Length: 189
Image (tube, rainbow, N blue to C red; front, side):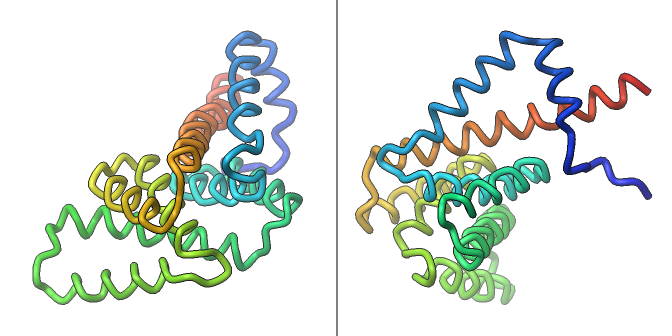
């Protein structure tokens, strides 16, 4: 079975740029602004982007931001830990919708989540920040609220939280934008 995902889609990006020059330019400006270092470093933003790209299930975004994170100094261990935070948040959505019934699942999820959020290659505060941003990306207000509070209790600032949510916003937009390549390919068939 052929894969929709191809690593080199530059030809399609050029076509998109020509089809909708103003939205293309506006997205590029938005993306540059979001990824400019501020309260969070370039490395921190790119690690967040890799995590959010997993939440949005965008292979193009995963590829691009993994490479950018590596160039910004992120280790493979840091990236893997960030993606495990996504796993815990995705499981948390199911756990919360299950209302954590006392069926044995509750303790298993709790143990998994606590293990993932413990300090390792990434600090606990930064993992809580990732968790909050992922919760925004997957649109789970309960998890977003919980992990924002946890992050702030651990010293994450409002500015850092705002920037992390901006990264989530850019990745949500970027995922839809990157998948326009499929529209282009299908339309041209």
